[in-house]
Length: 249
Length: 131
Image 1 (cartoon, rainbow over the protein chains, first blue to last red):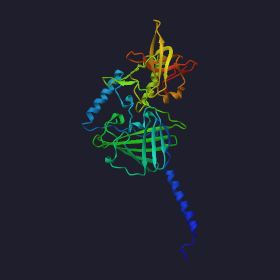
Image 2 (spheres, chains in turn red, brown; image 1 turned 180 degrees about the vertical axis):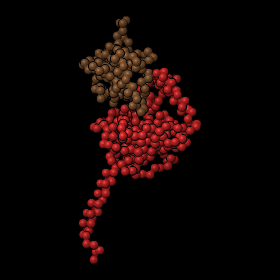
Image 3 (cartoon, rainbow over the protein chains, first blue to last red; image 1 turned 90 degrees about the vertical axis):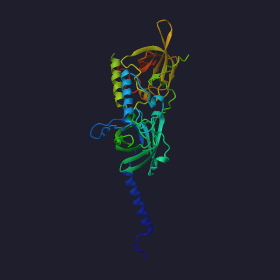
Image 4 (spheres, helix red, strand yellow; image 1 turned 180 degrees about the horizontal axis):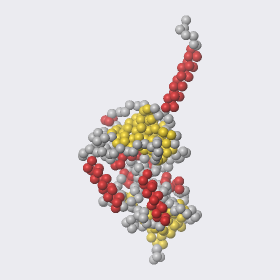
């Protein structure tokens, strides 16, 4: 005689229902971040904390401050020193996450979040539910290797393997050991926040944290951005100049 | 002058919210000056990272001087009404620009008066002047 009298079919249905309920409640804690998001600013009570300062260790501090001084002097003269964008190079992580006024498209699937930045058509992939691999196993690149996991309504993304020659936030330097932690969430239907923390004990006295804010752009179709007509060039002094076009005749 | 002040203010606002410049700063252009060109389009380049109007402008000696007018990227321009077909070779246009500081015949578009009468600016925060 069976220990309970619930027919097998009913038990199976009950199990199925409970599983569906569990999946449903899981889905509720994992919002869909998909959409086209445009750089924005938050004000008021929901605004993120201001950026923390960039405190560099020797020998990185002196050249960084010297470069910033040169940039400020160039700006005061009405000139601009060369930057990755002026050479049509990609920005890479983490700078690609907000470039001027250009939007980015976030595509979320159960196993992967893909982010396509409109400016320079940069792409990064965040693998969900995977363990981060070792530094040795990541070929250094512009976007590194990213894995993500959910903490409630927040997607926590770990990125390593960004090349040291990829300029960082505010042009800050970094080493092979840089680790970027992002906490991406959607505080409202039309708002996205990406809190970015950069850890790099070789270079930084303290981690640097700043938050990017985005606004949803409904029904936006991303525009192609292939850098085919770059008129800017860098002169012998490192200053960006504009090359004039011909008469076309 | 009113045009200059308005566009400079708008540009300042735009730059203040830019976390990173897409391609270059506007430092090479003199935002304190505007130059108005009346001429003929020789080429309209709907390209990234910038679009360009190439135009010939008649000068006092009976010849023409060629100018290159830098614009935003298609993504920046589209919301303001620009399309890849907005201008074509031979079109007569009036262009207001911030000239290059080094005196070369080039500049950054502030406003274009099109053959069909429309006045288009250069993306968010940059012209056309309030009518």
